Image 1: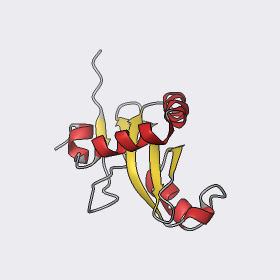
Image 2: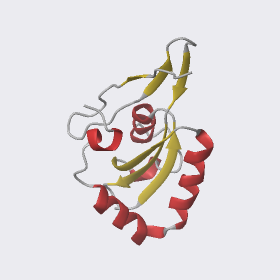
Image 3: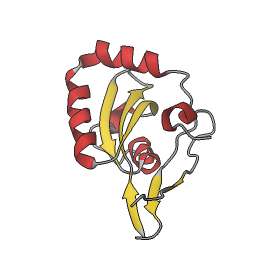
Length: 125
C-alpha cells in the first residue's frame, strides 16, 4: 500500500528562507516532526554554538532573548547553518559529531552553506 504525504511549510526568515516542516499522513492523522541541528555565530565574539531542536524559530528567539545560559553572554547570535532530520536521535547524533569537528571545521561548513536556498535543501517549489 502506497502512502501519500502532505508537507506544510512556514517561512521563518525572509532574507534566507527557513522552513518549519511538519509532515502529516492524512489517513492516519499522524504528525511527524522535523528536527534541526543548527550552528549559531556570536556577533559579539565570533564563537560558534551548536544545538539541536524541533522548533528552530522558537529556539533562536530563546537564545537571543538570553534564556539559554550557555549563550546568554554572547548575544546577539546569528543562525549560520542548519540541517534537518526525521528523528531526534539522528539529530542528536549529528550534533555530537559537529561539536567534535572544532572551530575550523565549523567555519568551513558554514562557508559552504552560504547562499544555499532553502528550496534546494527541501527540494520544494
